[in-house]
Image 1 (cartoon, one colour):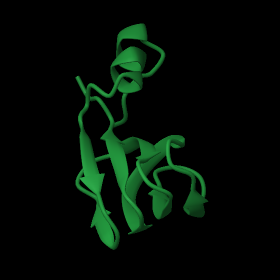
Image 2 (cartoon, one colour):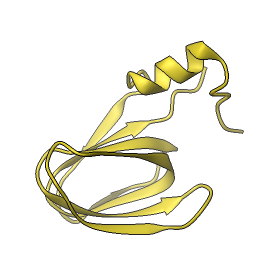
Image 3 (spheres, rainbow, N blue to C red):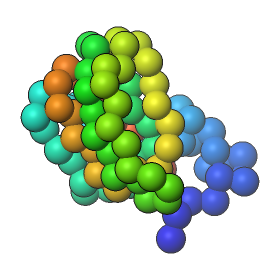
Image 4 (cartoon, rainbow, N blue to C red):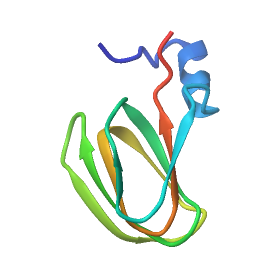
Length: 89
């Protein structure tokens, strides 16, 4: 079951990355957790599988841009990204 973001504590824990993050480079995939944000460190192309809604391929994401959502899998096709895990208490 997902996190209850209506509780301020859970919202801010996710917003400030308290679930941790993983760094991905070109041609790397991660799917061990639920992810809530993707930050492009360099211009990047990513493919994500959404927990709800549509899957997405974004090309290119400018460096410094963050994409928010709930993703079960993230692939960095090119560039470098940080993928933030959902905080679960």
